[in-house]
Length: 187
Image (cartoon, rainbow, N blue to C red; front, side, top):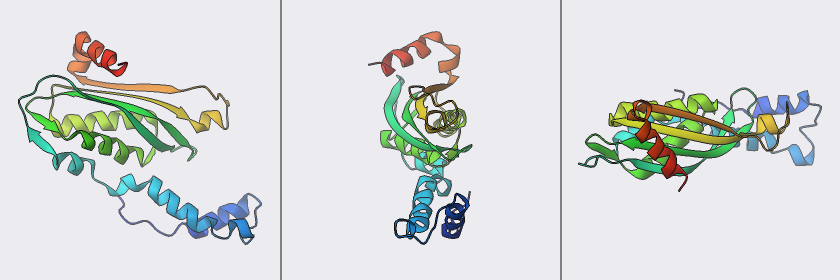
């Protein structure tokens, strides 16, 4: 994972020239610097360790019912077009002796969302990391997002959204667990 980023400003200047703009005009003079700063922020997840975030907030607890953190806002960049996709993630797990601080689940989602992504991979990365670190009886992740690459260009379907899910352990093998997760998401 890269932790240091180079200066993207010269590339942005070339990009502006490439689309026929004049990077020296008043409104664009600081654009390369702004875009550089923006892209570094939007991809800061590359410099963060998702396992470390969870490991620093693990607690031994004899709790064996579902833990669900829902409606976690996500903002990510599609790796195919570098356009945003925006939505919500719902993350649940069935503890097996360990729980994690609830805010760390939201931080985990942000770490992976702040990388160039496809929604399918993002969904699996969240589920697999929780599964590896907590070793719960099961993990469920559902993400619903709107993709600007579908709304602003290409097929231009403004009201479309994509839903992806990852079900591991009991969430995959037990229909009752999956149904409980889906019902709790709708509350």
